[in-house]
Length: 414
Image (cartoon, rainbow, N blue to C red):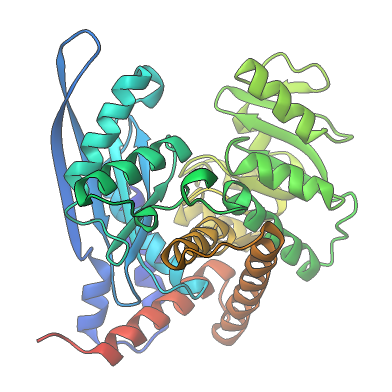
């Protein structure tokens, strides 16, 4: 990774706290993670050899409640990346008013290169290694890049086997059959759609026919695309890791999703032109939804971005330098900690349902999600107006203020 995500997170934090009158000790405490666990563990591979994997679990802050955050499987996972994502999770939970602190986990691996049994053994061993931190009241992992319902089921089962009884509330993003929640699979993408619609209203851009571009047509980008299309917008381009497809008159995104599911990529889809991921980011559009990985828009390409609104479905898709350039161009950026908070919000609903063994219907979940995100969107804009700052800085200021206030009220132990 060319950019250091943790350096970016700290740069954003340092700028945000300059607007707040916080004690220096509180600022210093919020700059660093509360605890970090690095684990190196053996897994027996299919050929009988033993391979050592390295994994991490970082808790950034616990002032508002137990820590919450996903587990990422990717070859490029680093401790600094996990630190950054844990910090962003603290702000994300605070900005939408959830009783959580931020955490993140990761294992350095390519999950696609592992056989199914190897992946399961690796997941269960990693879960065992980090179980010293996990509990429904202490640290609740979830899925992230490279993980999904299957891995969450393995983690929940592993943790439960150690305790001798089923504990569904220890992870979120599980299959429905073992305590998962309706609406969870689409939740992050739905949140991107909800916040993008609010931004279109603020920019006085009609939703009907609004041109939308989605980078990363996966767990977040695909639902964001088809849910936005179903409300009247036109999805003119989408992409996966290998490149994108473009159709000026609009793509039928559910058909595209069926094609991608069947073929494993967008390559060969006939109802559109091919284009690169770099070209896709620079298309003329009303809304750009970067839903892939960090650091996609940097100082190098930000000047060529022609979107009026950027809805950050991914974590940290813009670097601080790109932020400055795009803010100067008048682009309305919906920051990641607000835009993609739909996932953790419905994870919170899942956790609450598991704790009380009482489950809600999908319509109720989607409506509760909409209310929380619209309220949070308006609060962030209010803070932005008060401090005369762009939405990202406003979201950070609002979130940091909430966490700092909780810390001040709780005091320092002992």
